[in-house]
Image (tube, rainbow, N blue to C red; front, side, top):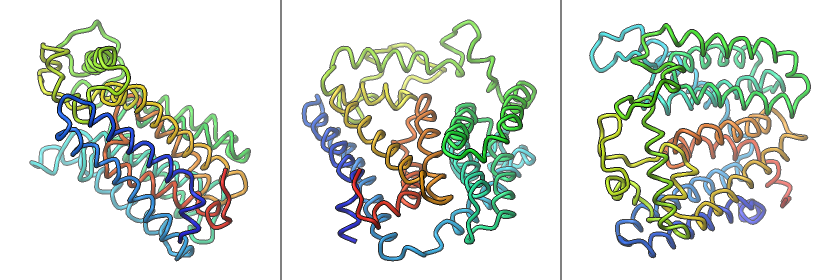
Length: 345
């Protein structure tokens, strides 16, 4: 277990990321409140440390089949929700399971990539029929969640599969066709305005589909005024009205810039952004290295990280602790062979 920790540079990168958050909190205008929020960064270190230790102690534990089964169950539950949209709290035009539809769509994007990884590189622990069924169920749930960036992220993750595994390239044209068909058909679903074209209409501050433009502008203004360490963790919500007095999408209180990279610049400045990018680079390089000679789990990790990078262009998925823990679990399973060999890259 200790050897696994010592050989995992991602843990050190997470320590630097957490330290940058604490520094930004201490130098902010509200250090006590910011420090409370900054402590959440260490939850990711705790999670990854537990996953690395558990996989070192029990490398054959059936984690991935259990994860696949839970993904499949949640895909079924979410897919049923749009069909029962009039049934009170159960119904919703968008599939969402038991979380926000955006988080649900991101989860299903990871599930699609996982099923594809085990189809491309068969594994005795996960039969091809089960992997194919997961792909179908998760793809349907992703489609019904109508989460635009999650669809794009899944396509980007599939692109990573194509680069890492030549056998996947025969599926390129069908994947492009299905992705385009999903994007176009969203124009005609009961999306409550969540179409692709709604984003590119003439800008209106009352259009909730264009709210991110104002949120990004506010984040950039915070960074310009506090370039080194930002306004501090949780400072975006506290200072939002100062930088954007008018309501956005009918809401005046926003706690997220809906872009992880701009959000980090706003709250943690250049130091925090550098720590975040270092961490993401370590995750990407480790997963890519593991996928070179590893099995389906390693391929899944190598596809999940590029997808995750794309998701954070319109969300702060890394700061959603539930989703961050899921991503780190997938990543830890895929990169476990590097730690068992005591290899540091």
